[in-house]
Each structure stands twice: as structure tokens, then as C-alpha cells.
Image (cartoon, rainbow, N blue to C red; front, side, top):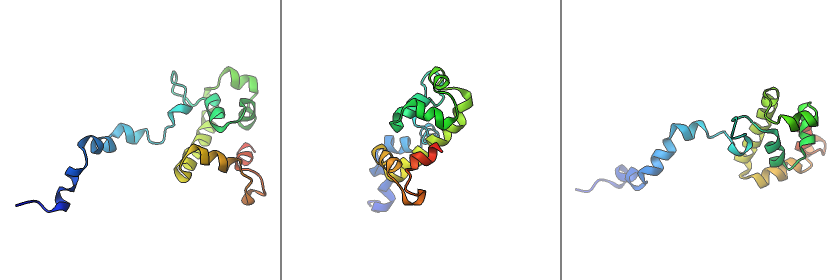
Length: 126
């Protein structure tokens, strides 16, 4: 006697896919955008974040309230990890909502009526 189709549905998905979806490591790392971190230290890297936002490091330095030279010298400084984390959280959330990096960049750089015609990126910068 054959099992009803709904009872056997889990057998239709390859075990590797099921295991991967349930992987604790994958779940723990879901919010991490590895390309924005320094691979040597694991810290957020201001230069990588500026590059992802397509802005000069000097512009990000101003947003963070540090000098351009200080940020160039130490883009993974512990003192900027909090503010960088908030920026990365916003980027990550926008990517989930908008679907991809290209849409995020468009949204960040488009004048928005709720911000008095300013771009969201200019609001983030203060």
C-alpha cells in the first residue's frame, strides 16, 4: 500500500537542501554581509562599506564624525563599529525588502518626499 503523497512530501526535497536550510551556522550568519567585513579581523570595514554605497570614504568619514585620514588609516577601528553596524543593518534590511543591491542604491539616492525631497542617503549622513 502506497503512502499518501502528503506524508511522503519531505522525501521529495533532497536531504542536502533540508540540512542546509536547518544549518545553525547558516542561520547564525544570515544577517552578516561578509563582503563588508575585513576578512583578517572580522570587523566591519568602512572602506568596503563606502565602496558598497558607491560613496567616497571621505563622505563616510564625515557621517561617522571622524577625519578622513583616521578612517583611511584604520577603517576597522573599534570606535566606529557601532555606527557602521547601524548602516549595515539598514543596508541589509533594505536588501531584504527591495530584493537586491541595485534597488537599494537606487532607493538610497532617489529624492524622497518624506524627507523633504532629500535622498535617504543624505538623511543618513545627517
